[in-house]
Length: 84
Image 1 (cartoon, helix red, strand yellow):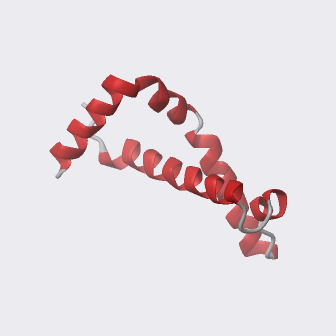
Image 2 (cartoon, helix red, strand yellow):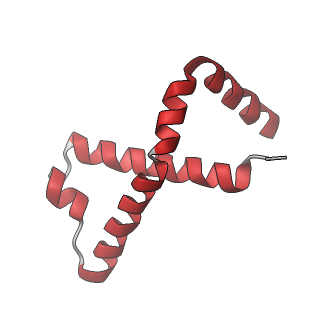
């Protein structure tokens, strides 16, 4: 399974490397936005993303999707990929 993921990742880098590089450059800010949002939800019950973008809006869902993908990409870079 790991070799499949590595080969799929290599194919993406080969064809759409600029998209991957761009997304990797914004992963940290997206994860920070998500962390701050969840911190506010837990602390005072305020969902800032929902308040700004509108509850249930397509843009809100897109932000949550991008935050989730950014978190997965950061986790993969940290623990999933073998950097030698």
